[in-house]
Image (tube, rainbow, N blue to C red; front, side, top):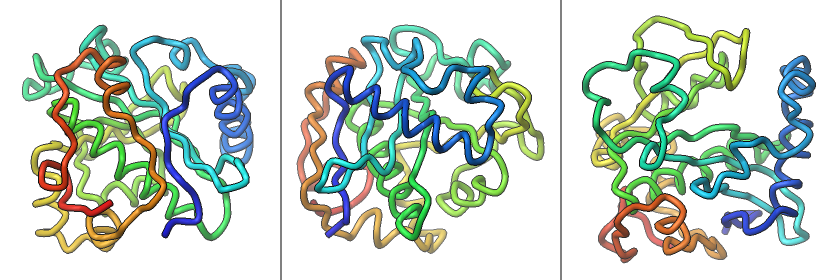
Length: 229
């Protein structure tokens, strides 16, 4: 059982908690961005009607991690506007996983893995073809271990999400996530696919409404990962 539960943000109070933790996280590693991007308060993208936020919080209500998810169903992703993506991404349903934060400490990697796990599942249920995200070094090693690939191999990019910061733009095809992780003997596979996570509260009906996508009904055999709950 996880020392935290993962759920969807439901109101402005949740978004304010996320913004507060986000500012603290960026202050540790990229303090200039906190003021430049006003990360201490919800961003305009946080308030969009077609966005969902994953929250990881302890039984006491302490937020230990979060991630913002948005698709290109209603409007292009920032990556589509800022870069000329390879042809395989054009005309495909894409999802951006952004502004991920995790509290420092021994559970940090566990929080990241849990957020990625549910980002995979949400993407799969929403009919997303590719999940995309950015990562700076050395965090990019986590995504490489999860079999994410460079959109622009060997090349760093800069985005409006983290101006002035060289990052890698990664992607993973959602339909083959389970196969990729197993074939790569991913060290996170047991946690992602074979660990029971009690208390997770992901309402896929809300995801469908926010993303305006066709909903694949959740069941134990129709998942991105062959996990148990």
